[in-house]
Each structure stands twice: as C-alpha cells, then as structure tokens.
Image 1 (tube, chains in turn purple, cyan):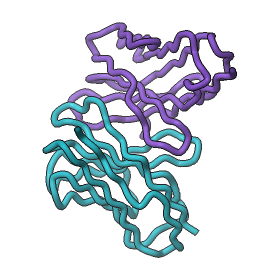
Image 2: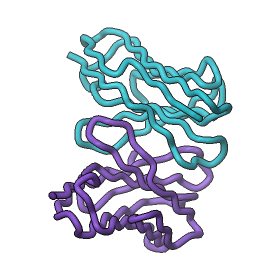
Image 3: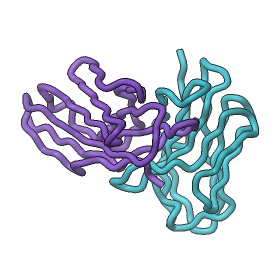
Image 4: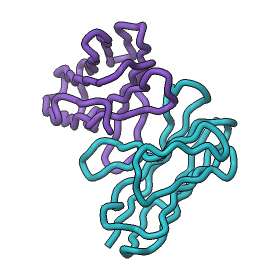
Length: 111
Length: 113
C-alpha cells in the first residue's frame, strides 16, 4: 500500500514562478525523500530530510517536514521549463529498510 | 562509480507466458535491492526488496517472485503473466542499513496482451 499522498496531482505554472508540492504520510518515519521522474525514465533522487530535521535546502529546492502533521512540502523556486516532470515523495517507515512512494505530482512549466 | 543495469528495456508478452527481468549493480557491495512497478500515470508500488543474498521480502501477494542469486543481481520472475502485470518495472539499489537515497535503473516496460 502507498504511504504517501501528494497534492496537487497536477500543477501548471509559468517559467519563473514558484512551484509547491505537498506530501502527507501515515506512519512514523526514519526519513522522507523527494524524487523526480521524467516521462518514461527512472527516478532521480532530489533531497532527503531526516525525521529530526525540519527544513533542508538544495539549490532551488526547499523541503520542509512536519512530523506532528505527518506532512512535507517541496518548493521549487524560479521554475524553468526543464523542471517539467513528475515529483514523488517517498518515506522510510520507522525501523524498516523499504522506501514507500506517494502518488506523485505532475508539474508542467510553460516557457 | 556505481551503475545499475536493467533489461530488457521493453517487452511484449502474451498472457500466460513466463517473465524474467534482470537487474545488476556495479561498483558497490552488499546493496539493498528493490523492485517497483508503476502503472501508467501512477505512483510506484513496492513489489520486493532484499537486504542480502537469498533474503527477499514480498510486499504484495501476486503471481510475481523475486530472487537474488548473487550479491548484486536481482531478478523478477513470473511463471504465467496476467494482463494486470502490464506496467513499468523499476529496479533500484541503496546502501546497507536504513534506506537512504535510491538509485534507479532506466526501467523495463512490460505489455501483456
């Protein structure tokens, strides 16, 4: 069963705008990760945030984690057409070795 | 550097035929290995994962099976495919211990007719 649910399912924005995607999950976690998938390709890891962290940055990416609400958000600032892809959150449930993915957000950035 | 190879990239199989998808990892040892399936336009469903040779955890009861005959080899199999087995199959690896960053192969697209 899927651990995470992303919101929105699809998002369309113009280049230069910010894109925010949200993820909710169900159980206690070790860490939460965000991945990107271009159509028909494998997934690429973007960022990992541990359960004792609240915010993390990587380039134009900003991830927040609220373990009390079991939710996370991914912010992409100053988006580019090349950011067009599907974005997935994934959680490692506490005391496990497995990574459970959410349903994903399809981001379309128009030039 | 580490690389992951997955094949075949594409296959079309009739219902009832067998399946074998193979995944190998290079440049690392004792990886955790994973098989996921992705239906069209959907998220990833974890099928199997392995923390060592011969150690397979199954997440979804179905007509698929997985084996890890060597440290860096992970095989997904079926004796008789169903229409519902169609999808995009992804192999991935991570370092030992609590799952950190996963590195994915390019996927195998299976169509069952």
